[in-house]
Length: 339
Ligand SMILES: [Zn+2]
Image 1 (cartoon, rainbow, N blue to C red):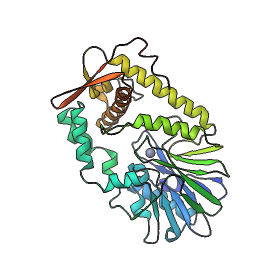
Image 2: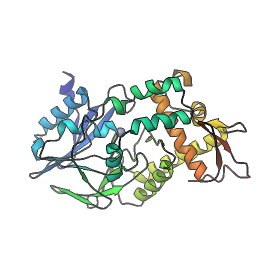
Image 3: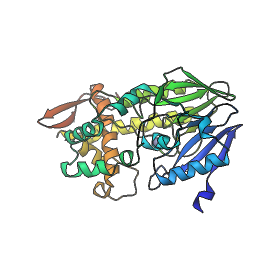
Image 4: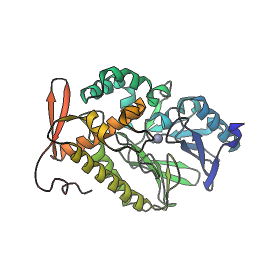
């Protein structure tokens, strides 16, 4: 049976990594971290709300002898691969710890509709909008209901067994993304703030936000911390966080320069810019991209355009219902981007 091959790794005494499969996703799997104790257990991130994830989690928790009625949850951010399954695992006696900005997002109505309208204004083709949203994994495999949430803020602590975790607010990958830091053991449970082999996706879906700027600040914040081991939300563990952070910053610097180069004299929509950027996908052309990937690419391009606009390096032109951008000409434009 597939489920017999569930991957569980004891990283430190009573701190386990459970590999939760993410079918059809380039992320491959989610790392759920389980801290076992004689008092309350803690589970950090859960998987998508779908059978493959639930089966893996239930089997893993059984092997670890975890009693869910004595278990609390910490969710690093609202994306469905982290939050989605909590509604199936949490019991009436479980506390679900989460951040305030994203609790407000989840509770606000009309969130998806606003994203659709925003994508349309940024050039996402009208005839593909509804289909893109329907195929969005975050919508398909989201939590069915929102459990009662205990809000934690930057600096708040969760104590489980021999572990004392402190919340580290790291907005960027999402609005309220939060890591957990164990300062004695120098461990950072990083969610999707720092990943290796893949780059955390930074998307922007509102003119009110500047996620890339937040993300770069959050990278600097973590860079200054003493960390021996990063436990990321996907893929493998990271030992040297500073080298990886330097690589991630270099990646975004290259991306920003690429966007500037793509923007020429003719005003372009975000979607047009996204279609010309280089993407690490197994497709020959933009037209062949799966719709969900076009959606993520568009959000990522907006994040970079927003950052450049706030830096005064590009200019927006709102023409009717469509937003386009042009670059500003001044000597040393590319040199102005140095992260
Ligand atoms: Zn994730």
